[in-house]
Image (cartoon, rainbow, N blue to C red; front, side, top):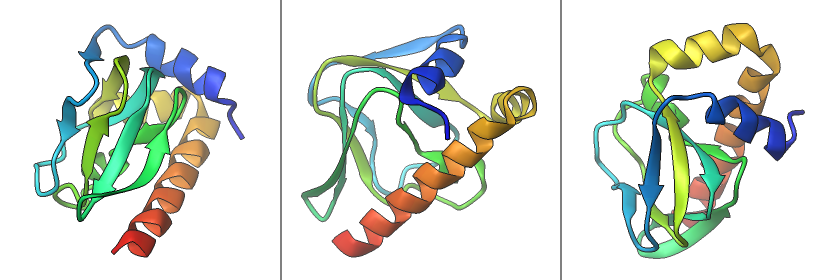
Length: 122
């Protein structure tokens, strides 16, 4: 299993970071999903039906379904605090997986856990 610090290290290699202020939406339910995200700094809340079902911290990855072709976003992702996110589109995700295979396992683990939390929130 990758430690959050290692996940952050992988994402920090991305050239562009997205800066967020508390309350900013990363994405909304129903949005087209072109990127996955990794939290470099701050916290992000996952919200469904107006309820926070998970709070993500630095090192967490989310929004993976979009680059895996799952379809539109299934929940809202809202910055709980000021922070920074790295983001990957499919091509870069595949490159990172090739370079760091354990990253793929961590992404799948995160995706599975997030799906479980989402189903519990519904």
